[in-house]
Image 1 (cartoon, rainbow, N blue to C red):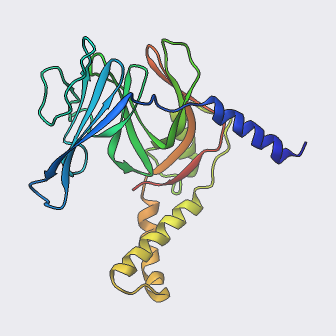
Image 2: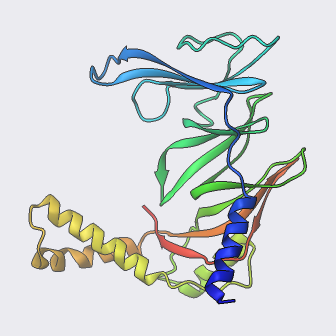
Image 3: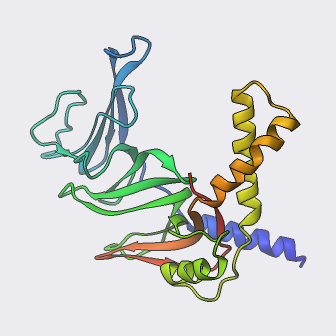
Length: 264
């Protein structure tokens, strides 16, 4: 059997064994009309109903939801989908997390960050019973949930992490620091130079477009400064991991390519 067919079969098996978030029993969106700051933007309340609780997202059109909350369902009576805060709401403390509803798995609620950073999207996991945050990280792409015992949740994703060092300036010591940070040894050091150069080229072209001078002479003038700036940016790394949330969250690196690029 050709190698490409074997790889396709293995990929299909891997994807079919992974699952996504639990679908809500129902969803409801309430239009609040134009917001005070922007008449063309309507505020909305989005409610996601599950068997034991409802997740409420009050979105007033600003960056991040105005309020995120988890509301228990008691005696089979579904909470109201309204903008006003109910007494039973477990409001997500904005000092701990701001963003948008991502999904639910078992009795855990996942929220995305309000914006991406360094090429990844932050996410956090909250306990629906207590409203407390139990885990947060940054991912590139989707989370893929794995088969696990009933008392735990396991999922895989590409983790995005700031290495806190400069691999273009001090490659050997930075690489050693990266391996120590992610607790992995048997992995090849990636070539980060192409990603750094691509970032510098985009930065130079963006500046030239802002000057209405998107031409080769302008880019040649701007590229040196752009390269100096990207070289001074922390190296961001992305690598596959598996996380288990029971009872204490743990992160395990998985075999696979490690990628890198300059931070924002």
